[in-house]
Image (cartoon, rainbow, N blue to C red; front, side, top):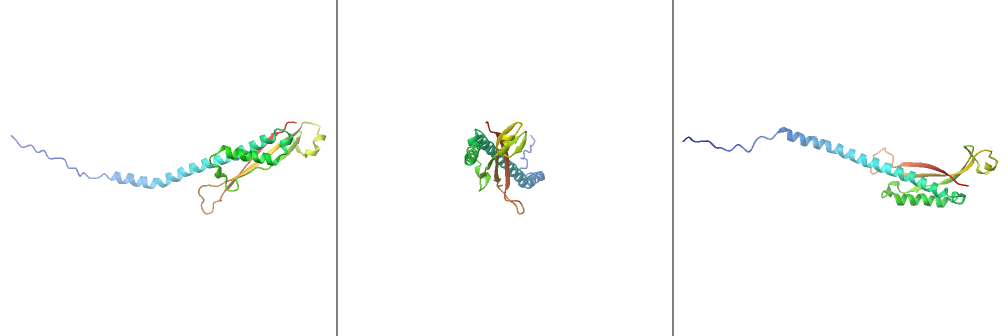
Length: 164
């Protein structure tokens, strides 16, 4: 009988150079992918803040548009706007230290043109009174860089006709 050589294959095969290249590519792309992810999160926070301000303006105007008494209730309109912000988002700190500002005014229109509310009685066409709320808040980004603004002011205006 002949002798059969049953030697084991060598287990210390050379490592592929592609393995090191893949690790290097991952190490180079990881910071870029992290920055992109943080950018997406920041854009989402900005959109949430813009929606908060717009919804607050609408809520304040809806409160004021109930009747002529509530239309002149500046404090009640501002409170309605504040309550809407507090009830709508988990991310309330997104509006910065000053929070939300929601000043309101009564706007009068005669034939589609803005008029002094005292002269509405002399209007010959369609006369109407509107509550206007201009809500504003400051968006505070998570990260700031030298030369970039500390915050971005968001504004939203909403008008609703007051029934008479």
